[in-house]
Amino acid sequence: MTKTKENSNIIAVITMIFLFGMISFVTNLAAPIGNIWKMQPGIEGSNTLGMMGNMMNFLAYAIMGIPAGNLLKKKGYKFTALAALLVGLVGVFVQFLSGVVGVGAFIGKIPANFFVYLLGAFICGFAVCMLNTVVNPMLKILGGKRSNQYIQIGGSFNSLMGTLTPMLVGSMIGELVKGKSQISDVNTLLFMAMGVFALAFVILLFVPIQDPEQTKSQKVESPMKYRHFVLGIIAIFLYVGVEVGIPGTLNFYLSDSQNGAGLDPASAAAIAGFVAGTYWFLMLVGRLVSSAISGKVSSRTQLSCVSGVALVLIILAIFLGKAAMVSMPVFTGSGFGMVQVPIAALLLVLCGLCTSVMWGTIFDLAVEGLGAATEKASGIFMAMVVGGGIVPLVQNFVADKAGYMPSYWVLAAAVAFILYFAVAGSKIKKA
Image (tube, rainbow, N blue to C red; front, side, top):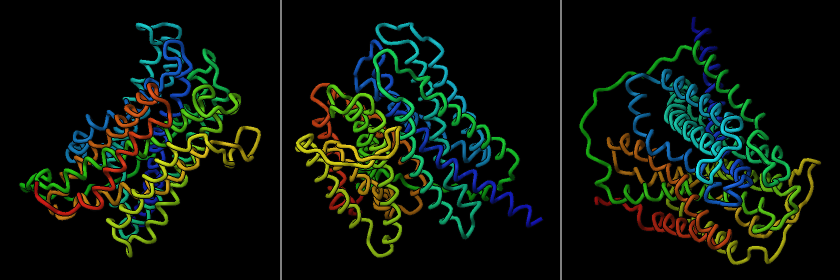
C-alpha cells in the first residue's frame, strides 16, 4: 500500500514539474508570436499591438489572482489543478482557432482573427495564474522532506522552457513577410501544448492527492498597513514588467530588419528567438548561483547588487545601441554559428543574470515581519503579476513613438525603483 502511494506521488511530482514548464511555455509564447501579428494588414509593425497578447496573458492575473486562491481553499489542490489544465487546453485551442476563424475579415481596421487570438491568450492567462497558485504548494505536500528539492527542479524546468520557447517559435516562423507569416506557422507548438495539457489532466485525474488539514481562520491585520510591503508590491509589479519587457522588446528589435537591428530578414526572427532565449537561460544560471549563496548573502544585499548592475546594463544598452556589433552563438535553422548582433542585445541579455533573483528577494523583503498576514500578502503578490502585461505594453507604446532603445528608459526607471526598495524602502515600517 505504501509502495503504491509512493509511486503515485512520484507520478504526481513529475506531472507538477512538467506543469512548471508549461507555465513558462504558455507565458513565453506571447512575445515571439507578436512578431507574426506585426506582419498582418491593419497591425503592420505596431509594437503596441504586437505586445497585446502578452498583455492579455498577464491581465488575467489581476482578475484571477484572488479567486484562484479562494478556489484552492474551497475545492482543494487537485480540483484546482485539474480546472487549470482544462482552462489551459481551451486557451491554447482558441489560439489555434485564430488561424482558422475570422481569417481575412476585419473589425474596424484590425484583423478579426487577432481578437480571437487575444481571447485565447486571456484564457491561457487564467490557466497560468491558477497553476501558479497550486503548483508550488502541491510540490510541498507531495514532496515531504524533499519538497524544496522538487520545487528547485520545477523552477529549473520552468527556466529551461523559457529558454526554448522563443527559440522554437523563431525557428518555426522563419522569414517574417508581410501578409504571409501567419499564426498557423506555429501550429506544431500549439498542438504540443494541447497534448501536454490533456495528458497531464488524465494523469492527475487518477493520482490521489491528500489536501492538508485546514486550520481555523483567524482575523489578521492587512499587510497594506506596512509601508515596506506597499513598496514591495510596487517593486514586484515593476519587476515582472522588467523581466518580460527586456527579452520581449529585444525580440521585436532584432526581428525588425527595417526599424530595428537591421539584421538579414531571412534569419532575423530565428536569431531574435535564440538571443531572447539566451536571456532566459541566464536567468536559470542566476537562480542556480543564488540558491548556492543565499545562505551566506542576505536578500537585501543580493537585490541591491543585481538591481544596480541591471540599471547600468540597461543604460549602457540605450546609449550604445548599434554603435558596435558583437558576436553571439545562435541557431539559425541551418546550424549553430556566430552571428553579429548590436552590443545592446548582449548587454540586455546579461540582465537575465540580474532579474533571476529579483522575485525571491523582493518577496522575502516585502513580507518580512508580517507574521500571520503573510498569506494575504501572497495573494496580493500574485495579483501584481499583471505588471508583466502593463509595463511591456507601455514600453512598446514608447517604442512605436520614439524607437526601440529609447523605450528601455521605461525599464530603467522601473529598475531604479527596485534599487531604491532594496536600499531603503524595504526597511520595516508601518504605513
